[in-house]
Image (cartoon, rainbow, N blue to C red):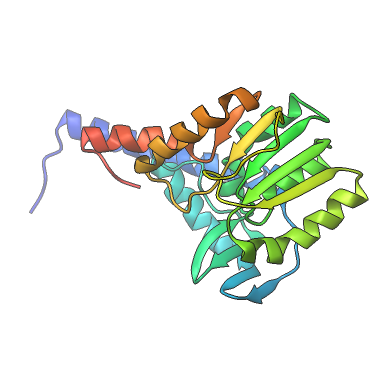
Length: 246
């Protein structure tokens, strides 16, 4: 059985081929960008009370396949894997955070906000493996860092490492164990930058919580940011349109 190709079909086939060629070229360019290495954490590995901090490897083959898949899928071009050795945090069997380039890309806005307030102050909600804390200490030398973390297990696993790091750099680091919705900040305290990262997945249902936090801390922060804000807006738009592929 043969298929008669119409001009429209041929045009579409050529267009798809061009898109794949462009995706392959983009993957090649991305593989040379190694700026994410500056973010890699060096916290000790840990396993206790359901909290696991461990190193893991992504091979060149795994990275190449995922990068091509990401470039072809217009909804996730910036979440491709890179080859290397990384660190991840597991909570009760679920992966909560890694220092892979895909997660580093999510932090460019808070990194820019700190860059515009060097030596200033920052409120970080959600400790995780300390990606933002480490950046605030090493790259931007923020003078005071307040971290609010609800889970004592994460504080026990990660807190001592960053306490020592802050002391070594002459930076004041306060880690508060509390629910951010109930935490009472010190009277009159303000911050140049506020970063909120307390969600496990990207879900448009969390937009209401982001708004509550923004409204509550609006007068205390010079800049407010929350993990995956843009992604949540995009997810809501896809849900309303009936288009969902990720």
